[in-house]
Amino acid sequence: MPGVSPITSHVLDAQRGLPAKDVPITLQYLPTNGTVGQESVIGQGVTNNDGRCPTLLPPSHVLQPGIYTVTFDTKTYYALHGEKSFYPYVKITFEIEQAAPHYHIPLLLSPYSYTTYRGS
Image (cartoon, rainbow, N blue to C red; front, side, top):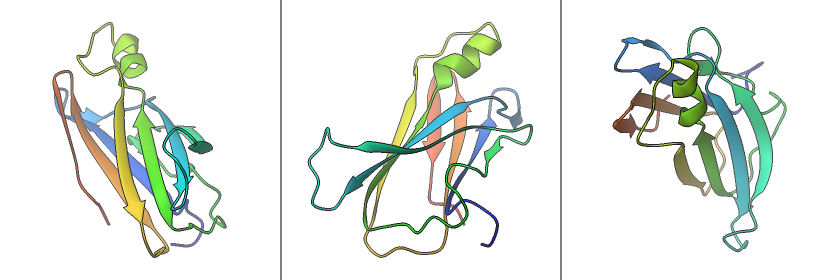
């Protein structure tokens, strides 16, 4: 996908039935031979008006095999709406064995639940 980060996300607020705007996101990477606790932050961003974050990584970034974690700061998002959430953040951890050009990580969010899947 030219011109887009190789890892993207889309956050939808199921309670409101709208995209979740202004959700801070952090992307971490752990090499295949790494040790848990030695993850490094490789990208950060905030969801846009459409609940998407297309800029976690530069479009030219080449993904390496390893373990990736996308952390969604849901506490900040709900605080913007004057609400609380049972989950202060949502961490989605996945492993890439052979890098593909693009991975999409969607999040369907509500104050007391969340759902994710590998998107396209």
